[in-house]
Length: 74
Image (cartoon, rainbow, N blue to C red; front, side, top):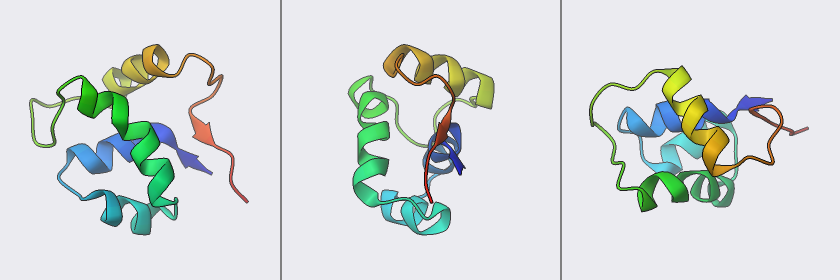
C-alpha cells in the first residue's frame, strides 16, 4: 500500500510524475489524478518546505471521501 501523501512528497521534491510512478509502483494516471488539485492550486515542486502533515491537510480538503491516506493496491 502506498501512502498518498508520499506521492506529493516525492513530486514536491522535484521528481517527475513518471519517476514518482516508477518508484512507488503506482499508475501514472493515478499520479496525475492526485496531483491535479495541487497543480490547479498553483503549487509547484521546489517551493517552500511542506511537511507530511501539511500535505495531509490539503489532501483531506481535496479528497474528503478518502477515509485513510493509503491507496488500496494488490
